[in-house]
Amino acid sequence: MSLRDLPAVAVPTKPAVRTEVTEKAVNRWNPDVRAASTGGDERTLSILEPIGEDWFGDGVSSKRIAAALRHLGPGPVTANVNSPGGDFFEGLTIYNLLREHDGEVTIKILGMAASAASIIAMAGDTIQMARASFMMIHNTWVLAAGDRHAFRDVADWLEPFDQAAVSIYGARTGIGEKELGKMLDKETWIGGDAAIDKGFADSLLASDEIAAEAQNATELSPKAAQKKLDLVLATGNRIPKSERRNLLAALKGGKSGAAPTGTSGAAVSDLAQKALDKINSM
Image (cartoon, rainbow, N blue to C red):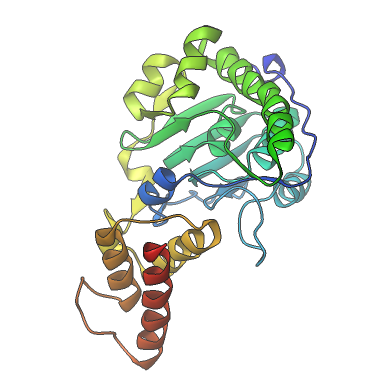
């Protein structure tokens, strides 16, 4: 698939509308999954966080990707992806940037390419996925504010974006619009093997290309647990009680019920516990 054959997408904005990471994507995202090594290749982009910049400057923004591509200049680039999604419109902008890049683009989905991140992934000349990784596609998912007239307007405004997503996925996979529409309507999760079978990806990544310190939330590194907690707090998503305990344990630096490793860790854990308790009581 040549990038030049992929459709470009206009990305207008609309006041009082924003997109967020879905609850299921938050719960399934493992921030510790990363590339084992770049092999000394400096022409690599990292898309390992939610899409879109938050209030603290975290997240993968189109501004950051544009700056990285300018720095790299023409030539092949590889983008390592492990993202639960986020700002759909930022995702479309990043997709356009990669589509227009003067050089071959390789996308490597290490853990997850959900929602907006799956759109970004479609911009690859070659898309590779880990066998245990997932791609998730769904209709444009937003939070909006306003009266009933505003919501009708938002629904009408969103429809072309869902059609744009169908067009992008269809250009890559060859799947018909009607079938893709049904896949988006029900939110579809696609594993590595299935993604290749359906045309969403080209090949599997070798297992030694991926490093994952954690296989579940209990084993997350404190840094990754903090990253996931920040996402939960930013989006207001609820998480299961077992997941809450696992995140707290990871922040403490040990298994569930373990004592904090030090005073600083205890303070962080206490704050995290209060925050998670508040989220789960909503």
